Image (cartoon, rainbow, N blue to C red; front, side):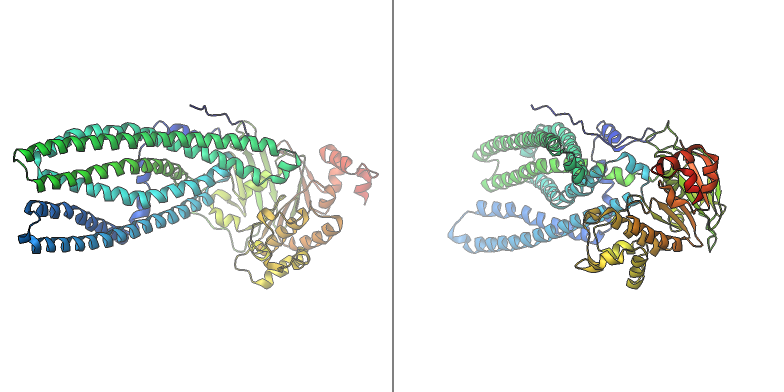
Length: 619
């Protein structure tokens, strides 16, 4: 057997304090059953009428099938003679009616069960996606996007098969099996007893191999998810991959991932094939033995030929149903593994939740922001504080610049202000109300953010800007684009505001993406404005124009500006200087230059080409 190769690609960091999906995967291998599928039953019971129609059609189809041996018995026992011509004609006519009932009931069963499968998967995907949008940033910090996408697509497809075709076949064969067994007992209790003795031999492989198939099915889905995760990571970073000539290494790694997925699937298929062969062989041998014993009773006159024919047909029905169930069982086991993976997402509890009785901010909002002895570390780095006992007060309408070296904790202030994470100690307040006392959606509605790396969605320019205000008119969108100096390049596109800029705005320059994000923030028109290097990707001329637009936007708004270029924050009301998660200095540009320290060092580094800090301070 081919050994599974090791994947050494870097993975997302794990949460030391919370169980990641990989940890869950290890735990679930200890307990594998069909319970995950039971968690999906509420998605089925929403459509009780369709389920009832499916069961009625299934019942009618089973009755029509079970009626055929009864007719055959009468025909065989009465014989084909001239006196029975009318009787035989009537029976064959009745069998045509039975065939018609069987055809209509089977088609109805297929339609209703398949409809339920498609509907359940559509609802399930919607529910999983809704849960994913509600999960906290810490979940995405420890989970690969490709892993989640694999569950949302491939696993949901397996569920569709289980609740559609597999469920239809399983229910049909369960009805047939128990119906045929009951008719076998009715036809010949003695021969039925012999069949019951053979059942444990037939069922044993289902139990033994079923557990193995379920485990291998789960492993196959896990390895497929790894493959999807790596492919998603590479394809969304193709410029970086090609810039570093990493194509060959990525191809090799992906081939290893594909081979691992194939090996896991091969083992699953092998186990299912062995299971199917065992059940079919044991079932066939049992039928032959029972048929031979029945023929002996016909020879001595204990049974009629018609009765034996009837019994044999019911035995074939029961055996066929058992054989079909062995195959369907493997698919249901596979779906159980997929259901378990989806159930994990549905059961994931967001760490950031609205309080039971949320408070409301005053209307209109004044915009005073307070950090009181705030200490915070990211879940992936529990021993390394990103903020260490940070305290400050920002007055309503004040423009605050935040500067410092990379990793000082500047962007973390924004993350906590939007409550993407909860702090370990201290308090964060807006207008005197703690951010954890209000609904997160209400809190985030009060802020407009321009991130350092803006996200452009693969939709039209109009809809990308309208993301800031979903009900905005076209005129408002255009006005925001003009203010952000985005109107010109949008109008130059072949489709204007209907132009799509590709996934993540691949066809835009960095400056164009930032102007789109600025337009989005302008359209939102929130009382608190968060600018994270908002003009860093603009050329000097565009930066000057956009800065003028931002100056207008910042009027009467509480504004926080993260900046590395000190020349862009000289006019801020105050500047916070951060280092190692602490605010080490505070004041105006001129005050900080005179104080010396870290800010003076940063200024000297940035203006060392012909201008020193004293010269800049004097300008």
